[in-house]
Image 1 (spheres, helix red, strand yellow):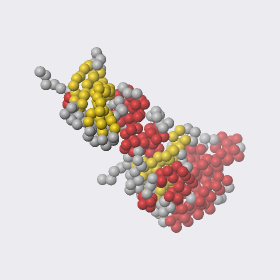
Image 2 (cartoon, rainbow, N blue to C red; image 1 turned 135 degrees about the vertical axis):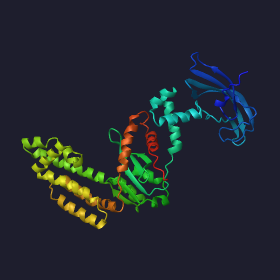
Image 3 (cartoon, rainbow, N blue to C red; image 1 turned 180 degrees about the vertical axis):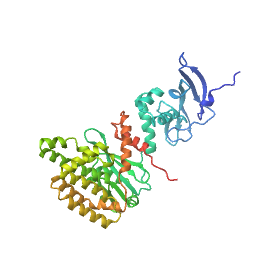
Length: 405
């Protein structure tokens, strides 16, 4: 008699393999028949307690399992209902290899989840021959278990920013642990109430532990942070301050172009990115054209020089010196007679503390820019991402953070 057995590939507690068969002639599917091991006392699937006795039997279910080589494996499982004294009712007996009500084994579900870390839903569905909706449901189940609860432990410095998830001004707010790079939380929208949803789950001790929060000059975020943890220093990010000033440059350029004669207008046309881009990123021919542009237009030359001076303010590490530099910058900027410049000067005055706080905490939202780039890749796997919860969990999975050694 042959000693070969497939039982070792199905080491399921309280169950035994009683039969195997090739389910299709081409050998592409196998059927494994399992039944309860009567030497073992059954357990309740709901509470896990040993059952008081057998309530009824003769039930059967088909489950998908991990494939063996190129062969799809199906389990034909005979099972019973047991009486549970703790639950006070009849329950399906517990399986060690699958959850009650599911049509696949736990090890196949784990395999699908691991594949989803590197493949799209459609690719995984083709790989394991499952419906895409089933693949998404499996992925979501594991994600909820691993990342469903917000971990507020050891948070001291945060970065907060918004990301565009769909066209039509659909945004989500992202909160990042600045020190580890972990995406802590995501919520729909970019209003005060949105960020309030993050702070609601924090204890008072956890709120008091926050030292600084990096963000852009967005009033709703500022209001939420000041309400929930007023002791935390607000730090306005250099990138967003310069980006806001870039809008001023562009408006000045547009007005100068409208007021120019036809020859100058042709010269100014197409100069937007020359003015907004960092000088070190320009090609030689672009740099030459920029020099000509600045030499020909004093107003554009002034706003361009002010951009570099604004960046220089973020190099200060002594708060009084930083405030003096800001005051000097505002005085110089006021000489540019343009409504957008005047509006930006007032904005800087309102948010001055957040810029000066950079002296104490030289941080910004630049780590979130890397997150945004990765999120764009995640969004390409568009299936299911009309579900904000699923999308947020996928982002948290992609950014678990650096662990301290």
